[in-house]
Length: 182
Length: 62
Image 1: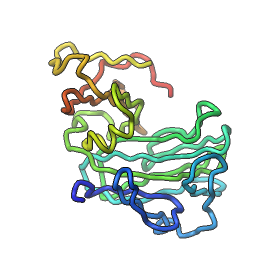
Image 2: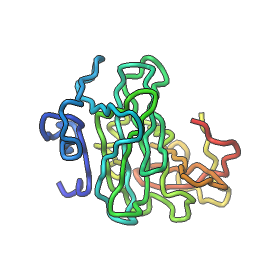
Image 3: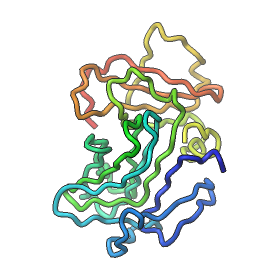
Image 4: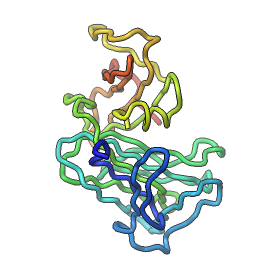
């Protein structure tokens, strides 16, 4: 489907590529970036998606994704939890985008999302060693309309603070009704 | 809760009751941002618009 041109949807540690029946989005495995299947885990609680765990002593591990310079993109990582003690940072290149930290014990997963204007022909989405080894289950990159970002912003990266739907559900807004918002 | 106030001179495009979705962002940078502000996009009458909030007076602390 031409609408999805430029979308990168990565299902970490997925056994094979697949199409999400609800959204018709194609998801690819992340073995191109990290071929080691030994670092794959299945969350203990609830969720069916696998998790890519990065057992590192320090530093970070990055997913290098293709972009077109000066184009605007949305990027979103999904992080399921096994423990409320989880805490590590996520960055776009060297710019910290947010902390992966459950706010309540009931949080099964959180999403870290940002919008940026590409300054190169690639973007590094990085997981930084923190209190725990970093992990991720899903990564999504989507081009946005050019006018989504103002040109006079003092930063090329914006962190999502909230998405408030005044009707319907979050999923309906993202994928079915308003494609332009991704 | 975050309240977004639009700049006074910004044209009001739709009535409050017609707004369907508000997405709120905050700039992040390795450099100090001298005048941080929220920027947002919103939908009304199925059209996408965007705006910029007034200056954020307090440091954002997630």
